[in-house]
Length: 348
Ligand code: ASP
Image (cartoon, rainbow, N blue to C red; front, side):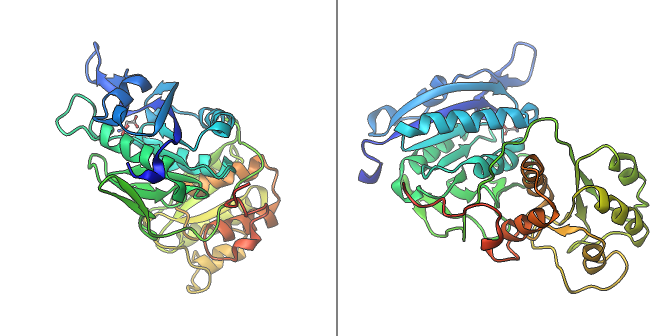
């Protein structure tokens, strides 16, 4: 570690995931390792100058975490950060892109929250958990990362929670930011910050488990039957549209009716790039859908768009506020349109 990290304190919250998995008596691997065991598996950590405290917060696979687990975690982090320099969260990578973004939206303190995990469990050759956890601790302890909100660190890359995605089922390089790339890297044990986000954004209210936002992926020949089936049972909808935000023409009347009742966000199923607003003019195009009341997600992919919409519904936002929030977070409007204060990077 560098002198920048000397004498600093980091709190580790362990939630489970592959990083904590070892052989289960019933076959396969399951989360069994404690936070203390995760830390003990990092070679040389005991000799360096960052003081580490651990909290066993949950013991679950990423797939079973709930929104309420993450909002409870955000509260716990907030309480413990008063006397720490940063927090690290270890969890399953299956939902890391969602939990990290929700933590980012709920986090207002300057100390970084760094989420990490592993793709190879502790029984495998080349298990990546110890290296990822060490890199996360180094990043959380480093003063350069104050004011950067929630970050995801895996494979010696540092990613913004707003942009990061799990892109591969098994590769240790699964974690990527297709829009903009990593914010930084760990080099020879030192975290380096190369890029910064244009703004930070926090929401005033934590969502509960009872808000339902469906993600509906549009596909060749979709006639809207699935959309119709879920449309009356949800508080909001994210359309994972074709290309830059398109749907089959036959689904447009239904989408217009739904957008009258609940917020309907228009994202892209492609995995990278922004939705468009003003290019295509055919029935079912982004121009058509926006005129029918759909709200573009910009650079937010459908999974991030769902998380943001959950928080906006929890905050009782009206249509204008939801549109403004997606414009700011989606990167296609001035960040000043975000409905709440954005000067979160200032040390208090
Ligand atoms: N494959 C997942 C992981 O990386 C399993 C999980 O999310 O718990 O941790």
